[in-house]
Amino acid sequence: MLLSLLSGCAVTVPPGPDAANPACADVITKLPDEVIGQKRQETTSQSTAAWGTGEKAVVLRCGVTPPPPTTELCTTTQAPNGTAVDWIVHQDDETGILTYTTYGREPAIDMTVPRAAAPDQPSAAPLAVVGLVNQIPATRFCVGQGETN
Image (cartoon, helix red, strand yellow):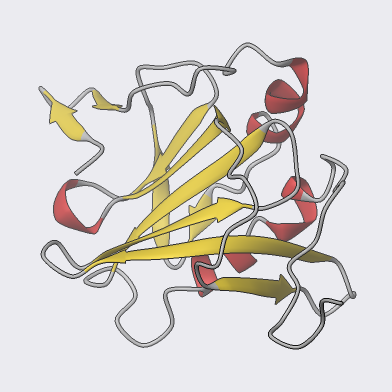
């Protein structure tokens, strides 16, 4: 798992390689105090955020390596106002953690969501930050099967 709890003070999260990117600061400083009913916690690295603690903690990292074009599952989360973000989704069956990584945005953002934190709708976590993530312009978008020439 990406994180651990350090003596009750802050969640230890490794930073992404481009964590110092100014676009990350714009996103991180405006993140909500709560995501999927969990309160925001202090983290130890630049351009990171965490909500909740222990095995149910949801973690966001800005400045991760952008994924290249892929055949992995790509999904779009869309807020009621129409704001949308494409995410590559990877599920670790052993840990039950889903990792959502923005697709087509630099710097990229990833968000880990343990199934234990949101068993019925893990996509609610990235949906909670769509408006902020959308501040980083998209240069590529997910395409579905049959949408390519």
